[in-house]
Amino acid sequence: MLDPSITALQSVEGEYSMSVILGRKLKRLVSSGALASPMKGSPGVCFFTPKEMVKRPDQMYYLTNGTVSPERVCSYQDVLDHLNLTRGNDVFTSTRPVLDHTHPTMVHLDVYLYAILAVIEKSQTFVPFIWIQLTWNNERIWWDPSQFCGISRISVPKEMLWIPDLLIYEMIEKDDGPHSPYLYVSHDGIVLIEDEMKVVSTCKMDVHKFPFDTQRCNITFSSAIHIVTDIQLIPFSNSSRVTQASREVMQTQGEWEFLDMTVSRGKLILDREWDQISYTITMARRPLLHVINFLLPILFFLCLDLASFLISDQRGEKLGFKVTVLLAISVLLLILNDILPSMSNRTPLIATYCIVIFSFMLLSLLETILVTHLMERDSVHQETGIDRAPAYDCDNKPDHTPCHTCDSEEERRRGCCACICDVSGRKAPCEPLPVAEEVICSEQGESRLLLLILGDLRAVERTLALFASGRREGKPGYWTRVARHLNVAFFTIYLISVMLFISFMCKEWLN
Image (cartoon, rainbow, N blue to C red; front, top):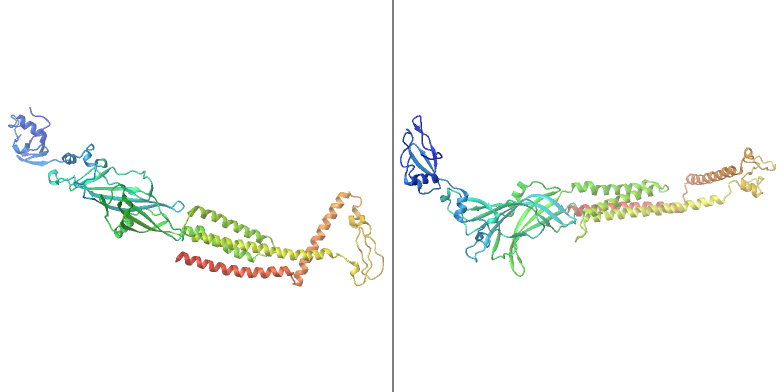
């Protein structure tokens, strides 16, 4: 009885349908004689037993219209079996894959920039996301694709083959992201690795022109232990091709604009010599955000300080306004301290910009304090002169009108008498005039309180009279005139200095 897994040719409407017989089972059946003759009692069924069908079991046989045509069935495992490439074979993993140890392994390297994830000026850290391609020749691997159904390339786990021990000099953190576990192997021995990597690297940044700065960061590849006679690194693409490809695949840049990427080959010479390839990434900062959030507010505060000279110096609001603006600049300086690095070869221009404007505003505040002091000094002198003069001096009248004064100390203390002069010219005696005749019977405490209030009101009246007389006469005091001249001179110098400084800073930033 024939194995039911074997498919024969059956007649369907006078024609034979095509069926497939596996070579391995066919070999067993032919050798046992199961296919020596057609099956009796089964009309329309035909079997063939040519010797060519069993020469190699790794074949498929197609039976069509009474003829047999063999076609090979190949798998990647057949290639691995042919190469004897297994995980436990140390021949492919232990040493450099060369048949002659004097032959260096030529490693071709290609790097493309996918994204600029972060540029941290404070810690001098550059974080790009790159795509890496490595190719080299494994001299122990070769097969003929025609013997394996045209298979010219296979993928195998990385653990099965030797891989160059490349490292990045600037890398400061290990990449914990997922990596591809496979690599490609070609029939001529060319091994290809394609992988993506997040590189946390150190970069020496020049923030002198922040936020209009351009940074250049390097990513340098080299072997860890193999010297130049063992491994030679060769860039697969030139600078223009790498730059163009990076611009096409660029995903995100953040506040940075990618300019170009240059490739250079060099050597590191210490006690030995290592071959290395360096990729220099050039990028420019987009300054709009920092200009809006930082530079313009400071400039606006400076304009407010200039406008404060229009406020009168005899009022205290000007001094308080300048102090408030100065405190606002101090807050912005604290924000700047969190952005810029702690150490730099040159002072950042933005730090100079903030410090100089802060100094201008501090000098303006000191000048305001000085001007206010001079005007107060002049006012004190004028007010002292009024205090010394009697409010009503009857003796100084031209006609020497007689007046009654309060001789009693109690009368002076209580303020219960006033001087009443005869303004009509008659020499009638002056009599004491009671101030509060209706409150004689009131309590002494309330009288004293009202009299104190009355004294304060008289002092305010004298002060206002002083200011009013000074304005009517148009003759300010000496110190007031000095303060006004000082204020005008300082404002002129202040305005010219600010304009020159802003022009200098714009020239330095945009140069």
